[in-house]
Image 1 (cartoon, one colour):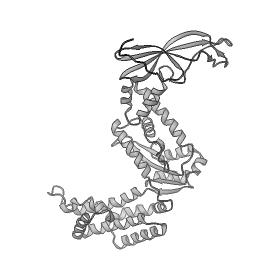
Image 2 (cartoon, one colour):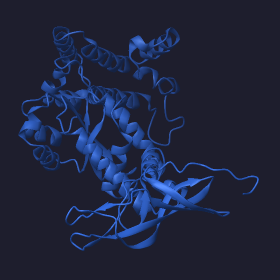
Image 3 (cartoon, helix red, strand yellow):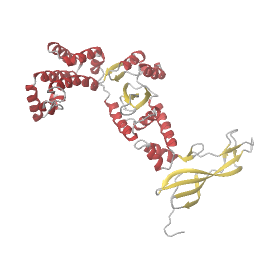
Image 4 (tube, helix red, strand yellow):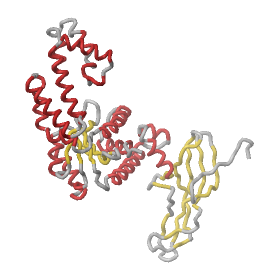
Length: 405
C-alpha cells in the first residue's frame, strides 16, 4: 500500500466494496450487494441461484473533485420454483437504465433550489434532462402533500414567466404556512375554476378566506367554486391604486411645459416625489418639513396628498366600526373635494367595496406571505433568464417555496 493512501467508508447500506481503482480524474469502486438471496417478482419465492453477473455503472457523488462511479456486480437470478429469471435491485440505486445512487439524486435535487439546473448538471456530471426530471418528481410529491388538505386561508396571485412576457401563471399558496401548493398555466376564470373544481367540493368547502388582487377573473372563479369563503382584496393592490392617482396629480403639476422644455419638471416637486408617497406618520421631522414646504406651494398636490392620508386611516383602523367610519369620512371628503385623477379610483373601489371591507372581518389577511415567496421566484427568473416551459417554471417554484419553518 502506498505511504499516502487511506481507507474511507462508502456509507451505502447493504453494499460491500470489492475493489477500488483510483485514477487521476475518476474514482471507480467495485461493489456488490451483501444479500445472497433475492425474492422472485413472479412467484415471491426466495432464491440464491445466480444465472449470471453483469457489471453495471452507477453514478455517485463526486469525491475530491473527481467523478465517482460504482461498478455494481449486478446479479441475474434464476428462480428455483418457477424457473423465471430476474435482475436484482437495490434500494440505494435509483433509475431505470442509467443508474445513480439515491444520495446523488437527493443532493442534486436539493441544490437545484438555489442553483440552476445547468450548474447542478455540470457539478455532478449529469445530463440536464435527468436533473430536471428529478426536480419535477420532487415538486409533484411536495405539491400533492401540501394540497392534501384544504388551507383555511388561500392566497392567489399571478406571475409572468419572464420579464416583458404576457404569458402568466397563477400561483396558489397556503396563507398560514406560506407554502406554494400549486402553479397553473394562465389566469382566466376558466383556468382557475378548472383547478378548483379538480380539488372537489369537500376541499373547496374547507377554504374559509381567499385573498387576491382586483382581478375579475379570479372573482368569477371564487364566486362559483368558493362561494362559502370570504373573498378579500389584498391591501397592497388597493393602496397602490390610490397612490397611482396621486402620482398622476403630481406628474401633471410638476411638468413645466410641453415636451422639450428644459428643465422639464419643477425641481422641488420632482425631488420630493418619494417623500410625498409616504404616510405622514412614517416621515421624519426633516422629511415632514420638506413635504410641508412643497404642499404649501402647490395646493392641488396638497389635496391629493390629504386624500391618500385619509384613505390610510381605513386600513389602520383597529376594528370594523372604526374602519367603516374612516371609509365614510374618506367618501365624504372625496365628494366635497373632487379630483379628476381619482374618478376611476372611486369607481373601482365602489365595485370592490365588499372585498375591501372584508379585510377587517378576517383578521387583516393579505397576500404578504405569497409576495415574499414570489421575491425568491424573481431571483430564480433572473438566474434562469426567464422561462419558456411553464411546467419547468412551476416545478422550480414549488421546489424553492417550502412551508415556513
